[in-house]
Length: 93
Image 1 (tube, helix red, strand yellow):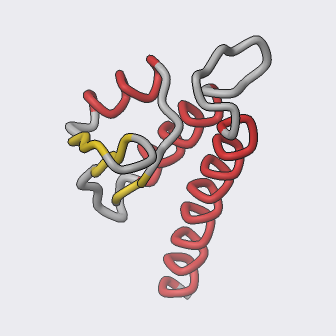
Image 2 (cartoon, helix red, strand yellow):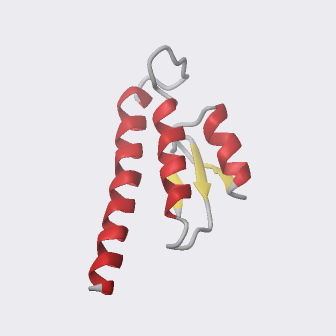
Image 3 (cartoon, one colour):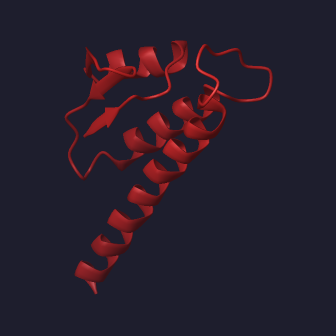
């Protein structure tokens, strides 16, 4: 999975290290690439939670647009997990 211009804070960086993700620098921000299988959906949910915390109540961040981007990115990751789970359930039926 590759996330371009991902909102980043300490939580996201720590989790990316734990997931053995690799960082690269893009024109507008950092990019994160993480190798995950479809069996690792809980890790994607953890990443969504970490990204959501970037612009959480009382958080300080350097990019003003992260106020909107962080929650939308987190919601997209959570939606991805829900869709994969739905496909898995349909395959089992």
